[in-house]
Every structure is written in structure tokens, then in C-alpha cells.
Length: 542
Image (tube, rainbow, N blue to C red; front, top):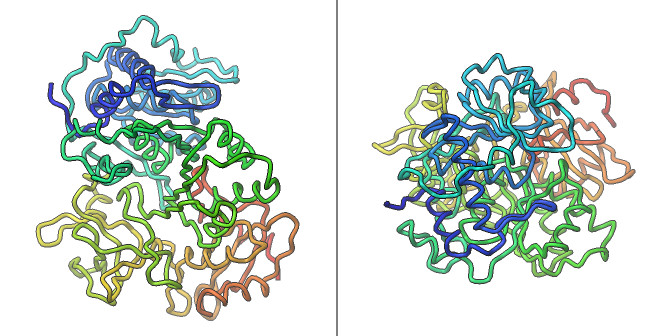
């Protein structure tokens, strides 16, 4: 049977190469590559027995746990499609994603039984529920759910599955920060090369050219790597896949929230070498914990921190370097639609969020209403874009697909969504999401750039920036911040710090100090909730 650039095919090759290595750890749960493979085979056979076939969608409505990655692999082995479900969704959002994704089965924690029961009538084609035991006492019988371990009993652990394909789908639902979640349809081969490094992240020879070569990229001395965000978040999910295909150990945070002390305890216990975070929202509590307890843990094993999916400010990076002088830090750009668009190359300092090199598959494209899309010239701005290994579109959303995937000179380009400038040296400076751009008196202001400037203030723990109405300029820059400890913050002090880093017209004109800045579990910003706080005015300070 032929092997393909299919995650299941390549994982099985790696599992055969290093069967006795530890593949994943989550709290007290541990599994070798052989154990993970066999459990995934058993789950795949159970799903097949329930009528799940190639192309069918299976929800993963779970906190971080070993069953998450087992469920993913089981789907891939069947050529089915796992669907990531945000465990914080309320009834309306949950009903939307279950319907939009056309789910046929769902693997979920027992805690979520009542949530599923409340929308079960909305999804009559969803016929199989498998619950993972937890400390809750909800009755799984209300939705006829089968217990996860029981589903594996008496199932075959053999790999007697049909041949797979490069084009089997990996669907990743976005976080919904710019509207309802959208299912990004990634063919396995495309996501492998665009988001998972193509097997070349840990090897000097770079990407592989045949699926069987994945075994040559297996680390001789395996790393222990911590995927810190919830697996429902794309960058964390992909990070876990990268490590499994390299024969490394994936460590998950078993807690339902991020507590710095807990993370550092796990890093010490498991001798973690690398941590993947999602921007400042995760960096801040980690740094705060180190500041309060600088000598509590032995963290000598740690040598790398990587971030993607949200702003990782220069100030937070520098704070990590002060704690770990030899630490390797990688600040990557990308999205659910684009995969990895490269890391900050350090160019165009003092401008935008970072700078990457233009390439054959990476460009800046004009997006002017009523005019054809085209590549911009040096010095011009447009939308950050990618071609080559890209998704095929959004599931069940042809309108959004047509707006995001455009054709230029016979080639399809993905408009990532971030505004960018093509510099004279042929590099690309990224500014941030154009949909969040603030227009103040005709000036364009990108919230992410202002946020990065504000985080240099020693008393600011976290912040978001939104546009609020202004009688003179139409909109003004408004900051919602949380302070470190009981340290006081004033508008004047925040403005003084901002002036050191950004132009005067970008400085916040209004300040709201809150206990916690609104964010999703992944660490991504919740701008709508931040705007609600600003408009309510309850936490405004002068």
C-alpha cells in the first residue's frame, strides 16, 4: 500500500521507528508511540463500526487530554475529519458549529453532556457520542453517549484501513474573533508543508520529498515539548503534530486555565525543553510567576520558547531573555488559513509588529474595492498573502472563500487578513488585522502596534486597544488594560510611555483599567468584549 503526505501515514511510520518512546504526557496520563497508535486504531475501528467513513466529520469537544490526539489520529486513519470545538461556546455558538461542520460523531468530556443535550435536536445527523470520564456526574444516558474506554474494549488494534491520500482533509475552525467560526479546509499535504514544517524543523537537510523520509527526521535525542495552549487552538494542535512526527514527546497542560506556577512545576518535573505559547496573554502569567518565585524551580532543561497566533511583544521577549540568557525565542506569524508565514526577522524596527522576507510564495497584494487584485510595488501597502501550499477554502462558506482566495495571473493567492507593507529591501512589514484598524481623523492606526507599545510600561500586565467614538476625529484610540498587582495607572503615565515607541497620533486618548483583559482561552483577543467595556465606561480612569 502506497504511503502519502498524510498525517496518519507518517505517524505510523514514526511509531514503527520509535515504538517505546513516550509520545504524550498529560498530568498522570502517559503513552508511548506504540500505545498511542494502538489506541487510535481501536477508536478508529469503533467509529467505523458506528458508520463513520471517509470524509465524515467528528467533533473533538474536549479539554486538553491524551484522548484529544488519539481522537485526531483515529479520524485520520479512517480518512475522517476531526473538528475542533471551543469548550467555552454557549448554546447558540455550539449549535452553529455542530450544524455548520455537519458532524456525524462527537468525542467530548462528560462535563459537556448538558450542553450537547440542549442543542441535540438541532443536529439530527449527529448519531454517535463518546464521552471521556471526568469529575462531573452528568448523566451520559441523556444523549446515549458511550464511555471512551468502553468504546475501545474488544476493538482491533490492527491497521487494516484503506489507502489514504494527500488530499484527505484536516479542517481547522477559526477562533471566531472576526465573526462566527469558519472551517478552514486543509489537504493533509498542504498543511504538512505550510504549517507543520514539512519534516524539516529539526533536521539540517530541511523538508522531506517523500513520505517515507519522515523516519529520517525523527530526533535521535528526543525533545520534550510543551503545547501550552488548549489543543482546540490551531497553533497548539499543529505544534503537537509537529512533535509527534519528529518522534518527540508532547506534554500538555491538564489544567483548564493557565497558572504560571503550575506550568513551571510541569516544566521542572518533565524536564521540558521547549514551550509553545500564544502571545503575551500566555507570556504574562509565566513571567509573573517567575518574578514572584525566581528560585523555586529548576528550569535548566528549557532552551526554547516559540509563539504564534497572537502578538508576542518585544518587552515580554526581553523579560524572558533576562530570566534565561541562552533562551532561543521564535516569534512566528501566521493564522488558521495560512499556516506558518515565517518568523520576525528583525527588520523595519519601530514599524509594525515584525518583518519577514518576501518569497515566491509570500507577497503583499492590493485589496481595493472595485479594482483587480495585484502585487503591490515596493513602498506600497496591501494585504499579506500566500500561495502554494494553502487551504482549498472554508467549509460551507463559498462567499467567504471567494473573498479570501483570489486569482492573480493564473495563480491562487490566500489573503491572510493582516495589512502589510512591501519594503524597499523586498521584505514585508506586518501591521495587523485590517478589520480592527482604527480610523482617527483619516489616520490608520493598528491596535496591535499600540498594544505592543503599551506593554513596555512596567505596570501594565495586559492590554487591548479599540476604537471609540470621538466628536472631532470620528474615532479615538482607547486602551483597556490590567495592572500588575496593585500598581496604579494613569492616562498620562500610559501616554508618556507610549510616546517613546509610537507616533503621537497613535497614543491612547482614553484609558480603562480592569481586573482582567478579555481574551479567549487560546489567548487571542476578544475585541468585541473590550469595546463593550470601553463604551460602558465603568472602569475609566483619568
